[in-house]
Structure formats: C-alpha cells, structure tokens
Length: 433
Image (cartoon, rainbow, N blue to C red; front, side, top):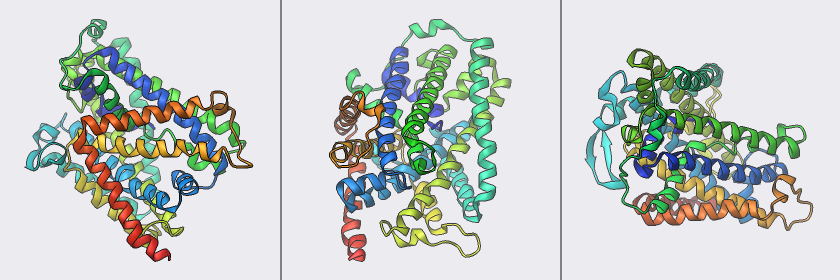
C-alpha cells in the first residue's frame, strides 16, 4: 500500500487545500474510507476466496460484462496509469540531482487541460525506466523478486529514518502549522476537499490487496479483516506522520505544487548534503512501486484471459521465459503513452475509475447478503449497513464532484468505460458465443 502517492501528492494537496489542518485531515478521512472499504472487501474475500478479487465479485453480482470491465479498467487505471504516474514521480525526484528531469521542464505538444500532452527529458527518463522494468519482467520473475525485496527494504528504511531523524534532529518549525498556502484551486473549499480525495485514493491504493490471497489464509474470517485493519491503520499513521513532517520542515506555501516534496523537505530539514541521500532513497522507493505494479498487472490479465474473460493474447506465455510477454509489453507501451499526460490529471483519472469500481464492489454486499449460505463477518455486521453505506456515499460524492469540477478527466474516464463496454459486446461476448 505504501507507494509513490505519499512522495508525490502532498505538495499538490497543499496547493489545492492550502490549510495544514485540511492536508492532515484529508489523509485521515482517506484512511477511514480505506478502512471501511477494507472491512467490506474482507467479507467478499471470505465468501469468494479464489483469486480474482473484483473480477469475481462483479461477475457474480452484476454479470460477465462487469467482470470484463474490471479487467479493462485494471489494465488502464489499475496498473498502466499508476506505472506512468510513478515513473513521472521518479523523473521529478531524479530532478533533484539533474534539474533537467523536473516535470516542469517538459514541453507542450498539443491540447490543453486534461487533454494536454507534454514531452521532454522527464518523459524520456520515465519511459526508459518503464522499458527497463518491462524487459526485466519479460525475462522472468526470479530476478524481479530479488530486486523487489531489496527496493522494499529501502523504502521502509527511508520512511522510518526520515520520520525519526526529521522530528528529532531536523531544522523545522512548528509555527509552519499556523500558516496556510494561497490556494491554486478556484473551487469552493468543500468541493475541492472531496475532489482531492481522488488523489488520496491513489495514495492508499492497495488497501484491498489482502483479499486476493484469502484462500491462502488460515481462519480468513478472523485474519483477513484484522490484517486489512492493521495494515490500513499502520499506513495511515505513516502517511499522516510524513505529511506532518513535511509541514514541520517548511510552510505549505513552499511545498505548493511540488511533486518531489520529500526531497525538498529533506533539504529544509538537513541541508543539501544529507538530503541527497534521502532523495536517492526516495528514488528507489518510487522504483519499488513501479516494479511491483509492472510485475503484478500482467498476472491479473493472464488469470482473466485463462478464464475467457479477457483478451486471449494476455494468456500467451513465452516458451523459454515462461512469462506472459504479450501482456507485459502491452502494459508497458500503454504506460509509456500515459506519461505524456499531465501528472495531476493522471492521478485524478486513476482515482475516478478505481473509486467507481470499489463502490460497485462494496454495493454488491447488499445483493450477496440476501443469498442463502452467505457468511457475514462481525467486522461489517456490527455497524451494518452503516459501513458499506458510508463508503458508497463518500464514493458517490467523489464521483459527482469529480464530474462537476474535473470534467475533462471525468470524460476520459467515462470514455474508458464506454470503450470497454463496446469491446466486450463486439469482441469478447461474440467470441464466447
């Protein structure tokens, strides 16, 4: 769950919300939403323990069309777009050492707003790293797993050391919490808060990951909700702690709009020499997220294709390397194309679609709970229907305000859904018939 979002979104939130209190509050609200969703997903995971996650839930609740749509959206918004976003964050952090790689140095190509495309050295670095991880994953998972273990260890160490050293020895000021940034958003603050939750969704993405391995857990009725709850609360504490550290390091006005906010905070706290070491660790932390997403995504498409619910090419395995090469390469090419998109709009696109399908999954509980033999978890039942209703209402609010205040990004997300429905109707459904 600890991904590139925590290293790349706080500066954007500072510009959108302005207030330090609201910056911390929105991460807390995001944690509560993630926790409510995690409890609901745990009940779904216990009743559908086989691998597949949302693909299984939506197929069983709403039919095979929505099962395919899950895979379709996973390809674009679940993995390709997050890989692109992480690669752009990588470029901006690389810009700490080589300023030409800062996202601000990308050149305008065509379009405007959510439909703008940019290219330059930042996108070149991002695409190069995507290509590298794509090739590595094509060649096999053994080396990839070793790389991931090392990168994950570095990621954890960077967070722990930065938090401990930052508050204990860093040159920060608690007075920064009394100062707000001039907002870059013209939307009403209540509306912007809800829309900004879409960015938080990117930061907390992965809160439902444990449900995908429910069949491997002993006593999943107990261990699944506990693992999701503990994991979400731990990540929330780290995220709120890091945001507090960023504000302690510098006033919100200084971090406003900055993508590589972690490197900037380290510079304020320790000076450029020590900050360079932290910035290098943050670069590797973002790479850990990229590598994990490049590895996991094609396996999801592969599993769905084997069940006839996705393109058959996604199930093709290389005879020598034993990896789903077609799925890996297609995902890599899509991610590279997405690096041309504006960074914030890319994050909004991810949040919009993932939130939509999470709401659909949680809403399926009201269908499944009427079925005989359905196992109801105490973590959900103790406040049912408040837990799923809370998650659904917040999710619908994010969708409505997203449509209203980010219409360009919402239009692209809706086009993704519409295209997926057409592809299923004319290709997948016809092939199955």
